[in-house]
Amino acid sequence: MEAVRARVRVGPGSKLELVGEVDLPEGEAEIILLYETPAEVGEQPRSIRLSPLNWPTLDGGHFLGGTLRREEIYDDDGR
Image (tube, rainbow, N blue to C red; front, side):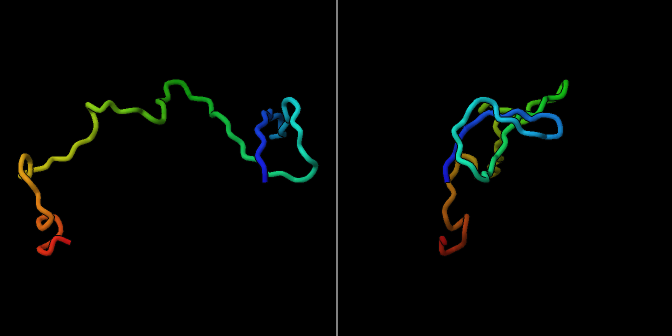
């Protein structure tokens, strides 16, 4: 199986039209379509990059500044 990158245009009735010339053999083929959806007015972007200053944090409680041994995390045998 080989891959070919080509541009297509979607026409009325969802008809696909190949834009430009691509050397393809005759026969059936499988395609994957990638397309952009139009953004609505006032719509927020889907992914917002958080600043490292605003990353979520966990409250360590009484373990802050101390040490935590394996036995305290898992069990008496440390496993």
